[in-house]
Length: 169
Image (cartoon, rainbow, N blue to C red; front, side, top):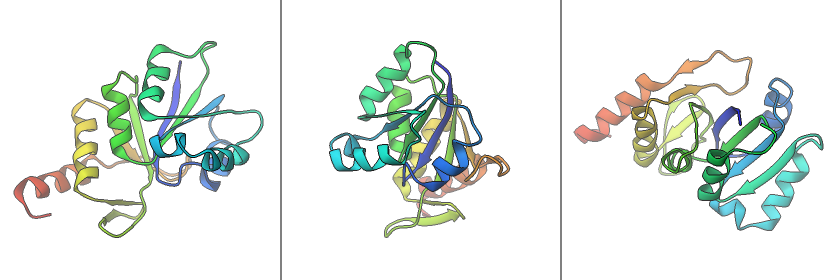
């Protein structure tokens, strides 16, 4: 099963996904990997309403999402995986999900986080998880929309990680 896009976006399903990404990449299915959305029928319903009718939509908890994509989906569907944070993607990867690249598209500023790029605010846990993803040989690129230039954000992550290790962050 080809994973067309694995994206960290704390808003999960929203206009940039539907109007930006889905109109520019070919996917058959969107899989939201989220423990909290999997337990919230209202959130699932609201997200499902935003997804075009021709695209299958599924919400699973993180472990089940990893199992789903690691075992393959019948018919070789092209899939977009959305998770709201790096921890969930790291968990999926550690549970066998064959993810080769992670797009960081939206990690917005909230209390307790620091902005390191225009679309990326993190705390120490986010940096540690992104760094662990990188250590597994997985590409991490920053891009809000498909037409944007792919930005290698590893140097920024490495710098932040070094600061955490030295106690300066």
